[in-house]
Length: 112
Image (cartoon, rainbow, N blue to C red; front, side):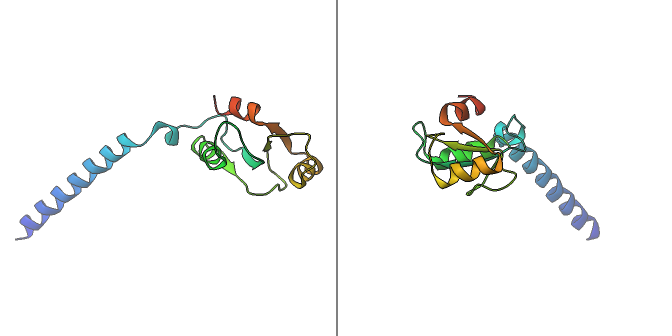
């Protein structure tokens, strides 16, 4: 009886390992690889023309970056449709020394 239990456990373990390998093979490459956005943080303000804000945020995270909802110390980039704007986010970014970039520069970051 013990040998049957051991055989059954061995089969379960084998099946699990096979399933894990199969799932790993199906994982999108963007989530496995690092990129130039690794360790970089972004905050978005204003309306983007080429994509919805949520889509831009998803691209940042898929490429290894992080997204902040507000301008804070340590933020790397504020992406805005108007870098010369007097908005509160632009003002705070300037005060903190955060790089303010437009959508065109952001698209270069993500390879578009």
